[in-house]
Image (cartoon, rainbow, N blue to C red; front, side, top):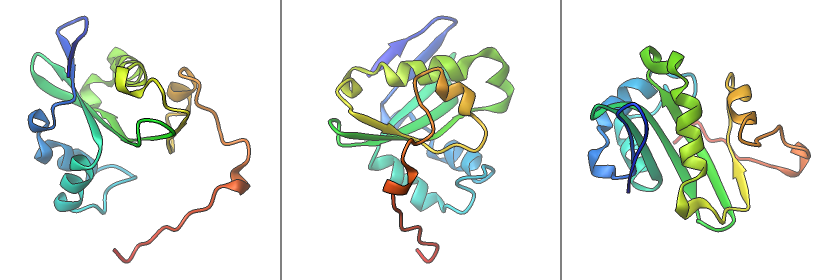
Amino acid sequence: MKIYLPEALELDTAIERIPINEIYDFLKTSYWANQRSIEDVEKSMLNSLCFGLYLNNKLIGFARVVTDYTILAYLCDVFILPQFQANKYGTLFVREIMNYPKLQTIRRWLLATKDAHELYRKFGFKELESPLRWMEIFRTDV
């Protein structure tokens, strides 16, 4: 689904349009996904709702949402290429994702961030009230 935005920006969820190699090239430099193989990046994209942010048909941002479209959505792998970060595109990008029609019935949104708390607070995200309720298995062997 294409959504046209101001300033020649476009949001698109068409997975076939998103350049996997460019996503991989960025993620391998990130603090959160630098250990992923290109095969893992591709598989994760194929099993998620992916968003590409384009400026004049060039990818400048990416995000994916892992969701059941009802109860839970996990927003992850969100980035705007560094040369475009000063333009407030991150705020616009997250706003459009949060307003995406198929995601309007989600009860609980989750994300993890090391350094973008203020961006996500603008959209109602906050630190977990009860982190002791949550548990995880984090496997480094796969």
